Amino acid sequence: MLQMTVAINQQNFKGHREVTCNTCHRGSAKPVSIPTVAEANLPPGPPPPPPAAPGEAPAAKLVEDFPAPDALVGKYAQAIGGASASEKLRSRVDKGSVDAGRFSGDVEDLFVAPDKWISIVHTPQGDHRVGDDGTTAWQADAHGMRELHGGEAAAVKHSADFTRDFHLSKNFTEMKVSGTEKIGDRNTYVIRAKPADGAGSVKLYVDAESGFLLRMVEFEDTPLGEIPTQTDFDDYRAVDGIEVPFTVRIARPGNVTTTHYTEIQFNTTIPAEKFTKPAPPPPGPPPNHQ
Image 1 (cartoon, rainbow, N blue to C red):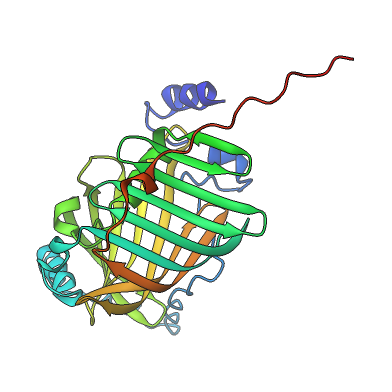
Image 2 (spheres, rainbow, N blue to C red):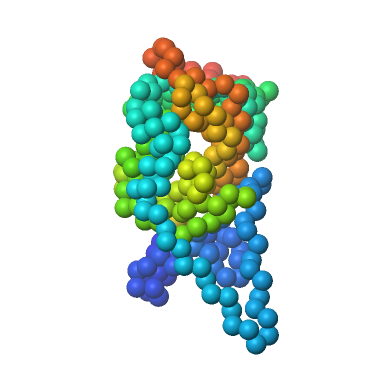
């Protein structure tokens, strides 16, 4: 199927990716190249403007003098506690609850800068673990352990950097303010940017009033087309002088994961062995042919 979509695009669209696997599998009458994220519990967008009266010219679009992206990034840095506030962070421990649709339970996250992370979700069916020991990303549950590669590993490595969202100017480049958008009742400026590692693209939604980052939409370029991941940040609270969102909602095509934190601590001592990749389960007994 991948070969088929490549051939269609080469023969009909001069090599541009117009047809993807999502074109057919979504079952849409009008093909859409980027799948939509799941929308459960997401705030509604603004209502459309009223139509013009008969004989009346349509209302003129507002022309806004958008602030520079550097100004918005600077406002965000000041809103969360200052440009250098997060530079002192060496580790982080989170506790709370998570609802991932397929499973839910209590969650504990451990981080050590710059690249170690383990997330443990305790469920009645057993623990779900995702981690990165600084070299290898992995996932483990009652069915066993497997190493992660490609886009899965990249997503885990992004999550392992718990200060990534604090340092927008460091971790994102080619910033450009593209417009405004409402998230719930909040007005935001939308910044289009590229991740510093060069993978995919991103849209950052900065609250026009508070300066907080309310949403991030990351687009991963894959053989299936661009796959979006939307992260919403809410309920900012001060922890050691740094404003941190205590509710984080991550929406992907077909799935929404919501985490409500009850406790966040910075700069606690975390033993290195906490991040060790689990050993694979021992082989089972040989089959009984009798």
